[in-house]
Length: 89
Image 1 (cartoon, rainbow, N blue to C red):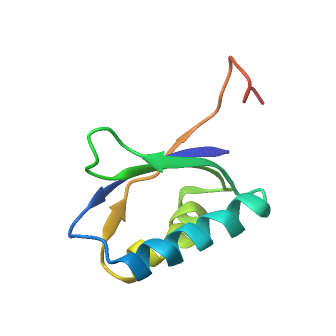
Image 2: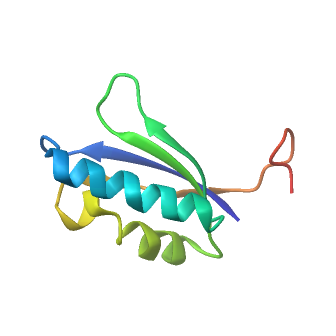
């Protein structure tokens, strides 16, 4: 299943946490778990599109994000099954 995972920033992002977050994302993309990610506009948070079996599995993956471990952001994963477009199952 796919999950759209919007985040909301709770505080400013230190440079070292941003670097760790980007490294975490790159590894997740390389593993095929994260499909895409980016900052929201306006920049109040971000959005990660990922693959996981369940919402609990998506939450477990997101719990490893340095933004979460550093208390920078919270995620709210929403599962969906694409029926039209490039991601159609």
